[in-house]
Length: 289
Image (cartoon, rainbow, N blue to C red):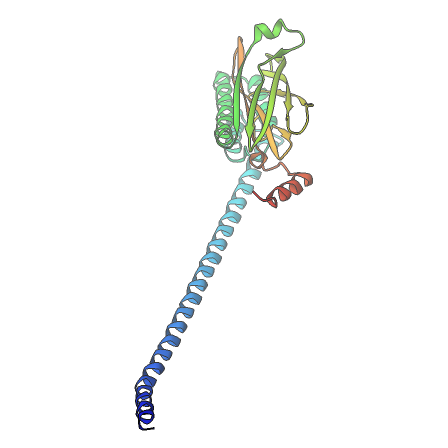
């Protein structure tokens, strides 16, 4: 009984000594937990505030930029639509403004053709300079679009010999090419049907075969010249993809062409994705990889 009493007294003393320490540790743990929780909440609030401010700033910036582009577009178009008309220099300057700011969302070929007719019928010694300036703008717009599309797509080039074209009444068939984009292989077949030297335009036929879908060839006949830009003038393919032919060089002896095969998301802003393509994209996103 004495030993039990001594052992009990020992543990009582231990309990008396440790009880304040346990209380202190509990209080410290509660304080640390509270501080950690409040710190996480503060960081979360800061992130949410920063994200909200950033979103508001970007939205305000986009609205301001859209408003500026809208005002600029209306101002430029008034020059072309003014009843009394404007000089070639003024129209040329405004066409350059349109081309360098709106070429990805507007089909500017009618304005380019209009300017070419204006330059042709105008009087003065600057006619040749205006023609070169017009062609230079068209080439720069095409090059800018092609640089982007080549980064996200595939391409191949072909040369057209006009002597061979003239000796081929049914059209000149160019060498076909197979390209693969996003695991989809397509065979592209180009044929030149005729050349209009006055308009400097080629009438062409594009054939596209997609082996995994069908053995049939999708065909399209179109006219292409310096004023046809790939993001605007292109052929819609399955799986939200596009193909476009551009004229790089053109002279009396022949032409240098490039076909670019690219995702539909990089087509013109005016292009609307069809309902079937939206459903197909959602279906593909839901499939396991």
